[in-house]
Length: 340
Ligand code: TLP
Image (cartoon, rainbow, N blue to C red; front, side, top):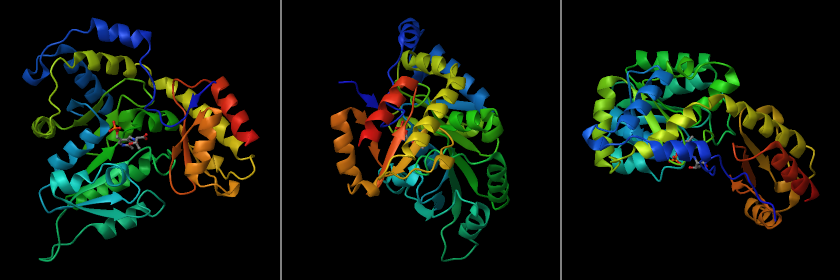
């Protein structure tokens, strides 16, 4: 049976070109700073993000957690959207690792972003924790891969900076945002102090993310990465795949077109509610309550028929397009889903 795997853009496998680059990578012990391929990846990533330096990390989660550790002090507060990955999907890491208090704000990535953020920043008061950090996410996973425009990022960044609050961007899919907006990654990342972005999502690398920021910030982050066990040795074999991944940013437009095609077709399927207008990038969120099934039941049924997707709530299902899914695969998935 043909399987179309739309669970996540993390499921891609390295292609022949990537494996070839991995096999040929020049390597050294990166904890000693001696892996030339890792260095090249970090320099390339810093350049793309318009930052002084970058750090190769094994995962997006570690990149975000190292950023929170580096920006905050124990007991300080972090403003974050209530649906953000850092708050929702990172196993409570900020509480355990950084001993910070998360301040989840509902709607932080909506039209009232600026006023909600300004309201959440603490004044000086003996009772209050100090607001140390604002975390943004672009594209926003749980909001269906939606893009935060550059102007919103700029206004949030300027307001946060005026209050002495640092800004970290979870840019796991920042390349998707840049492609959707038709701008450079650095046009977006100029509005944050640090950014994490993933090489292992739509870009197809098997492992790895990058944290970019100022030189002194990355020096401190490197020590936290070591503390968390993320100091890797001959990591150039992985960085080589990342370098190949960074050459293929433009291909994300294809994933976006496939997601639009999927959304347009699903919107016409009875029992399934999709808003194609909210599909900005490679994620489609569908409400399946009209089928009379829960998301888990619906997904189990689709799995039997060869279409894989992820649960996103009691009645919500997420479909993600990626480089290992062709237009024909999307058309096949539409046929299966439409048949119910
Ligand atoms: N997201 C995964 C799951 O963890 C939900 C997915 O399938 O989408 N930030 C954002 C916005 C992400 O979507 C993810 C991964 C991460 C961080 C973490 O990256 P990894 O998986 O490399 O730790």
